[in-house]
Image (tube, rainbow, N blue to C red; front, side, top):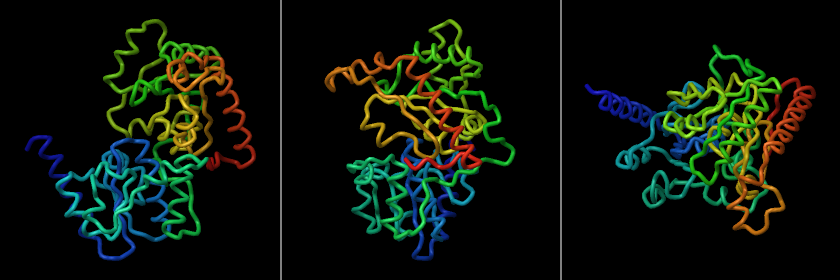
Length: 331
């Protein structure tokens, strides 16, 4: 049997095995977005239901790759559009983040379908982690909710083992989220000069964009799976990056994060909110929304990011001293 056929067989067996267990009313299926950040944030709702005694089954490829990090959840690969109606008919409640993706018009064929579209786009000062925890509380009547998805590292790993390592993610899903590459390299150089170990996390297909820059690049790390990326982040001391799912993964693992955003509104909703984190925004002096969108990268200097990183380190140290460990950032 080919690898593709083997993977499809495993996918089918896993989905079937999960669905057969659904018998009670307090059960829910979570259908995950193909985006990593969306997945990690929606798992906050899943975690809170699990804590309240619900049986929770999760369908999604990012979650499945990280299944060992979520031992309290039952996780299977993403459902196909053809399998979804049959499999999900066995659940009284089906939850996905977006109204029409990855499943389109699920509300037309499942009476217990819930989406979080209105939660995501509400006029609300909180980040997505806090919004989703509040949603779990109000929608399901939970008295005690947390802004964590319950992610747990394997015992073989050591939290922040490499305390001086700054994991950097200079990429993003779209070009409009990416700060200037040369400034990321300069930031890395200056952090290195200050005694930090800097490394870039990149997809294999992204490496060419950086290798052509030449000069003294930091080590470029690519990972064969989300689990290997998570292990590297978990043992790093800090994270700096663009608005991306990798930042949410670092925050979910308890790593202090500094995220560079192009707009305040986006940052308000999508800043990583699982643990201590700060953001860097374009300078106030850039006039009009159109010019801000065009020149936001140039308006953020390396010096400003370094200053924000120094402030993040001070805040993290103060919280650690006060609590004895990194506490959850409430967003």
